[in-house]
Length: 485
Image (cartoon, rainbow, N blue to C red; front, side, top):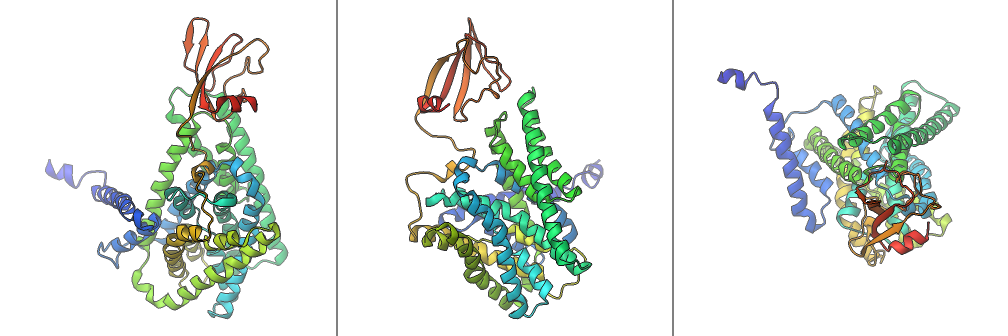
């Protein structure tokens, strides 16, 4: 009996125990080091290195192909949540700057860095450009986590600018990387490169908006008795957007991000609970990804690429990122202080390491250890730039003390000033015979109760508003919200 219950068990309890211990260590350590301004994601990487074959844990893990697949799926949900939790109203004033930095800025950074790798570090030209594309995006997970955890609101809409940029530039960097890898493997002409770029962008944008609109229509009109089904549906939508876009020749990550933004800024049922659900999922994925990437690395290999890695880090921080940033933001007459700060917030993280994995497993011959080079760059970038981000924000007098950065996210809720108001609905009211979801009720107004004749109704999104109803509304500054309708 003991033998059957022990070795015969279907679940590897050692793996589950390791998962539980590692997750607890990551969460507790991030709490302990928070006061010192150490980014949580850096701790996850370091813990992975400590548990690895070169560390005290001695865990052997070197399956690049498996890790690539896990990371590819993880990025889907990180980018989806990045879009889903972005407040479009807050981002709209800086959307042009954000998109230009996430597209043209990525190209400029990749090109300049690629030439540096070729002429200074002695890499083959295409391999240098490949490395430039891999390290060109800023890391959405790192930026989101630092802004949120430090509650760092920035003047001039910079928080929204950085959120949009870091959330959307992964898709463009991924596209550049695939184009360069294709050139290295089979060779394509310049015209074919441009054609591929255009097709992938057009397909991703068109399909993203199409899936988002259909999903919004569906979610507004269906009422699940089991609330957990809404979370499942959203997971399926994110996976569908990525897989379908990749299948028909689009950029899957850009498609997922667009769907996330559209749904996150639409009136869909249980949006607040969905945001909190994906926040938890996103953090769990980030913990596991950063830990696993640290586990996959060999710290003993870092001294061998130290000089190359440091040269690349210094060039990215002080040359490539500033050139790309100033080249774009100068056209918008952005203040110099803001441009300097945005230049500094060019954190490289999990996305770049994942892209390095893609490059290593693509089947092209590489003369350099790109994975450990990029790993080193991400490690130093998150440690240096991430830790000093709040310091530079205050030093440049860019911290907005009268407001909160949480307003740039869709799960923001005012902490005070909540009001209750009874609103009678007469025969001519424009909400009559409409469901709560379709009645164009302001997003900051909550219908908590409906009084109908002698009955009290606790409504949901599908509840129809009838003439003669009295709606009990809750919110902040209700009179102002209702006057703006």
